[in-house]
Length: 208
Ligand code: DC
Image (cartoon, rainbow, N blue to C red; front, top):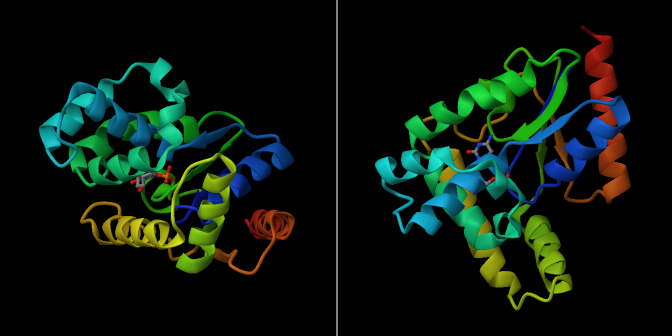
């Protein structure tokens, strides 16, 4: 079974995807990490993330970069959003994601375009979302816990900017697949969101 989990930044899709993978015994790929690695590599190369050529050159990042803790920070998230606009970058990352999705036994992938582009045949498609306020609040608490000095307003601004870029790009924009089940996590706790996702996947699997 292929499970596609799409949604905006800080919606809870990563947490849900990991929990689904554990529950159904499937391997999991966080595809945002690939775009983050490209963004980070452009930075390390001294390149321009808005330049398609510089971004494409960074696609051949070393696998060891995927373990770099810098990939998780907000700056790299912003760079990832900028490099992900370029169609050749998306094309270059396609095969890697596609072969992960189609491995024997199935897989869980989370990202922006899994249900629409990478695995449109997925048996279960979830679109995990939440209000900007709820997502910003979560990100704020998470960052404060890590000791990062940041304001709620700055996080809200950044999320809004990133959402807009991800939604309005020409290729593979962030939109729910027509057959995706939408889970709004704004008012849900972590365990409630996970339970809702497991339930949605079970009902999708039962109807195929
Ligand atoms: O999920 P994330 O915040 O780690 O993703 C970082 C950026 O990568 C996001 O702003 C857009 C891009 N991305 C994408 O375009 N397609 C995906 N499947 C995953 C991420």
